Length: 521
Image (cartoon, rainbow, N blue to C red):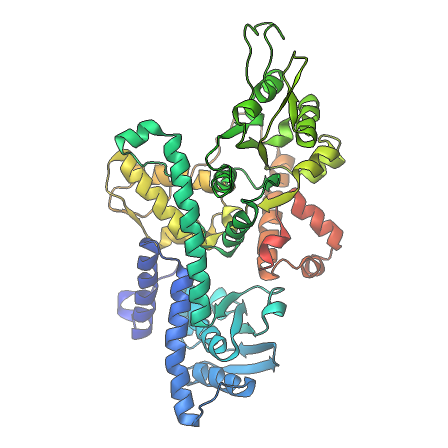
């Protein structure tokens, strides 16, 4: 990012730097930038609105025409060149050809979102709701700005942007989310203590499970947990490697009536195919060479509780048949046995693969697929949870400080920006590894450089076609992610932008493990 020389510093650049560093300092303390921006939007916009009302002698709520007059006048009085593109009861669109902050705004693109937040604050107070979307802006080298303010909540679902509510409504929603998360965290801690008695005795809280749900997609997951946990419905959790599928399954377990019963987690992909049936269903003495005693499988050991089957897509055809019988009949038969046992176990399955495609390819039983797909919960990848980043970074660094008995460092604003922009194919697990390396090599009380790990070259000849295909896959995945965000999950608009059919776009989304539904709120 280009920086001005010391002699060319001016008051605007000084205040820009000061405001952004203030926001970053708030992040360091665990606050979400979205909340601070919303707070600033309501506070600052109220001041500007009161000044406008005083001049115009207005007492009632603003109408659309007055609202447009206020926001255009506000920006133009401070040096902008804003004009109205279109307006109606559902949406106001404005254009701008001159930034009030001059060319220096390109050093601070976050300021565009922050200053445009006054549009949302004023609209939320007068119309009850607003979603502000900066479609184009000078700070991102578009040469002009295009801002959309959506005022109809239902129609706004089809569009990207930042939502603004009346302060009292926003506060109520935040309190409901905080209460729900507190309940889940409390129950997760109890489960952790039950399975970590030695840590309990030592008073060591390292690794204590905590759900981070500052982002809208994760709040959606939180609400889904609250809905399905009290039931016995079989659940399929889908998400990329490292997103925290097991933690979500534990949250579902502890929030339901089986919380006091066993929770067992099995990674089906880590068990040899020859042992998977014995591991799941147990075996009788003499069932095979080496079976010198009766062995209870995880279904018997999880009686009355919950069984989490990770990487369920890796089950052998024989194991799939046996699992289907458990789900249908509620009974198992040990390997080598001749009698059945009734079992009462809730199944939560998980996968990072596209099960629909595996069913089409004949690699996964269709009847089993529909048995486990009573409820689907999709965990968004880390690159779609930018609001979660500050809290996740703080949590990870705090744990590292305890682990290595060193002071917990801060991260610089540049590093946080790098964290936000990295695609994180390994998700939270990759973030943990990168922060641990960066923590160990940090020479001050602030991390100023991320120690990113690049896959080593294995010495084999470079394959240009393979490298090209991988690069194209990465580019396509990033493009689709950004398109989903910009079009709020509207696949028809994405298809039109790409010149493809919606069917082709859905196929690409499945191949990259992306879900359009995660972007529609």
